[in-house]
Amino acid sequence: SHPTLKDLSLALNYAGSDTIDAVSKLLLTQTQSSSKFGQLERLDLGQQTPGHLRNMNLVYDALQHNNTLKSLCLRENYLLRSQIPQLIDALKVNNVLEELNLEDCDIRKEGLEAVVNNISHYNALRILRLRKNVTSIRDNVNLASSLPHILEANHVMQVLDLDEQWIPDLEQRRKVEKFLHLNKAGRRFLKSTSSDGLPLGMWPLLLERVDRQLFSQREEFGQEREDETSDSRSDSTSTESLAKGGMCASSTLFFLLHGPALCQR
Image 1 (cartoon, helix red, strand yellow):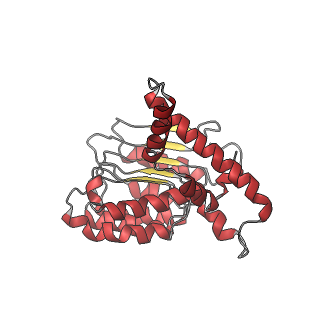
Image 2 (cartoon, one colour):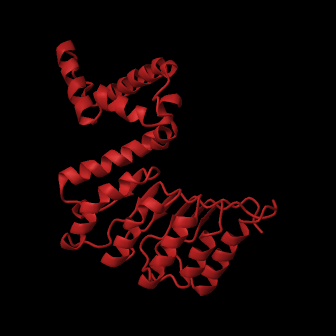
């Protein structure tokens, strides 16, 4: 038992069947209520030699019952196509895992489509990294066109790390980013509010939050031009910087209305 173990990194190793079996058992113990068991939150199995993780079905099965693991890294490993459905089933059931790194895992078109098409069913996953897998634009046309609709039904995911060529159309990329931004603001709040809308008593707090957000944006991007001393030039710089940050009063207000971020500070 490991009552204080929260972070376990086995990256750059030679993890064999025995190692994976031991890790899966460690994950299964987290379902016990007894304090003698550990509280593993982060697990890194990335970059194994020779790059082929065996018996990963045991880990996926354990994830269906685990209630502590928040981050799992499998990057730069070869994942068997036959085990992708098991991973997806685990993500549908698990209510704790927030970050999954599948970069450079040789996931082909069918596996990639399966992982992405089920995003709306993932309960807790906020960060999903899928770079350096399928690289053909032609193979991902259907995926790119459907991704905005898939994310529209997901109120949790905040970061979807994809190769840019997977979504070649700028308009589609903007739609994807819009739903990810809405989730960062906490879109579930809007879903849970009454049909009457935001209570009047919340508007002063909301507008104060907007003003603070805009000020921080101006301050952040304005630092890039500290050498500019002219007042008129500074005003121009602030405006340009704010535009570069993709944030204006209307968009800030829009995002905050879609989540509890207005109540956080």
